[in-house]
Image (cartoon, rainbow, N blue to C red; front, side):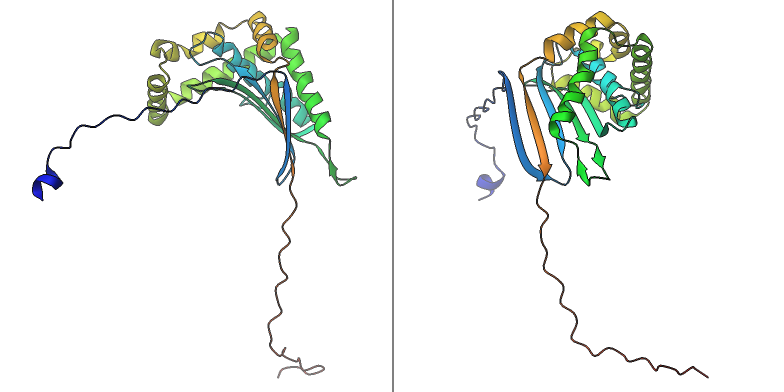
Length: 239
């Protein structure tokens, strides 16, 4: 019993790791579901792995759409009242890279309704088109770069953030020297690079996910307690 319980574990065969091939988008695919408290439109595009040199330009592109300082192209649409909210991100995963752009349509109080998903998608494509045109304001590009570099410096003052940088570099087989040279990589991206990667990755192959408002669950009415209400003494006052 002691040998069986505390003895040396017999060597076995390591199970094969399952393979999950990344989905490659071909053409425009649209999906709609009623599952949300409020509607939203999400555009998803194929991108690159974080080991690809285009990664740095794609990170800057996503920040130019929605930045941490709220000065991006889609942030301006929110301030102007065209959208209720927006978020863009480059997701560099181990198996695949993705560009994700999400927005919540504007709510019209007078009509008690949200703008259509088609209108939201048009607004998103207009802002993406500004990146493709290469006519992004140089001042905006430099401001976003400065904010990204500042955020990196702040993260390097936090031990947990530094640990996660090491973990991600190890798990993603990334070059640690490149990760530590983040600021130089971002500063080195030009407006021409922004236009090039935008045209290449924000293309006609992608997914449009429309999350519409789901039906509100109808709850049963609470039964009134079976008690006799206290009758007030009308016309009387306390001494």
